[in-house]
Image (tube, rainbow, N blue to C red; front, side):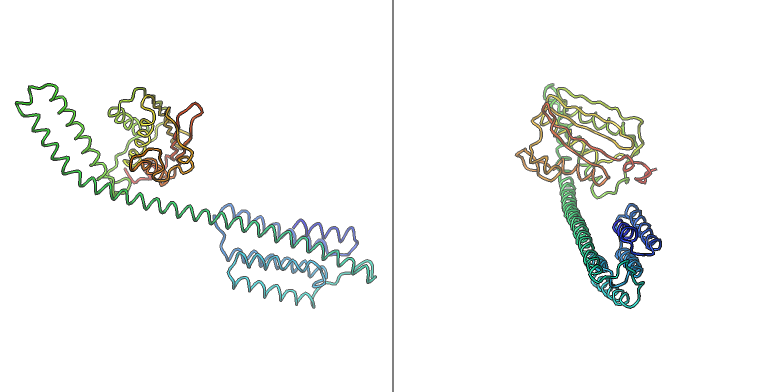
Length: 404
């Protein structure tokens, strides 16, 4: 459009070629309005339909045809700009639409040879006319070539971004399928563990009632600890069976964000007993949410990882950033390996040698991602690592979960 305006003004005011420049500038203004509408649609809609693209190209062809009609018709060297619309249609649209544009531009070309407003050049010399025409052809060639390279490069970049997005979606689909398989395995294991845990609980209870064993205080204390741990195992199995295959909000209890995290931390501290534990809860104002068992287990997995890496020091901070929960877990261990950070959140990405390592972070990342949040990890400058969980509070709101 800037090229059109510059060419019209140069030809009319500098070369002295009489042109209906007011009408031609009005056509350029129409193109400005058309592009503004396109930009607004681009910001309000995530994708552009093929019909909308075809309509915009047809309007471009119509505007160019009017400009050529007003400035000599087919004898105007800028008639080659029709190829730009054809090229864009061939790259962006289906074959029938591209061939439609080929037929339309061809018809416009033929029509402009017979119907046009002749140019009245200030000099009638044949050599001067040819020289002016060659200059115009050169400018048109440079303009068309530059625009073609610009648009094709832009389209190729969009195609690469689309391919990368599709690859990411396929990766997420594969990871979510793995999460489903892990959930099924966990549910099956929970069912199978229920019977032996119940048997062990009955045996321990019988031992506690035997007169011969009640005289041994130390043994009774061990039995009490065994009974507590069995109850804890049964509670874990019950939570797995409750959450597996269950929609969010079914069986969930309303709570608040502060209470939800405080309860998680209290249960974790009572069973792990770290040497130094720093818990900083700055979440304010509090937010009513629905407790999510899977989310809670994912957070516990991250804290367990930090505790394994740094048994002597673990720090947890909870804060609120507008409508986002920010939970950070820090340790003073060796930090993440570069390979783990590069593939953070992928299954089995861990420096631990035992089977199943890396699944805790993998499950947490998938749970947070499904809730619309994000999990990031970094190594701290002074040593250790930091995992940060950012979760929109709307995803846990009581109204969003259907709990009243």
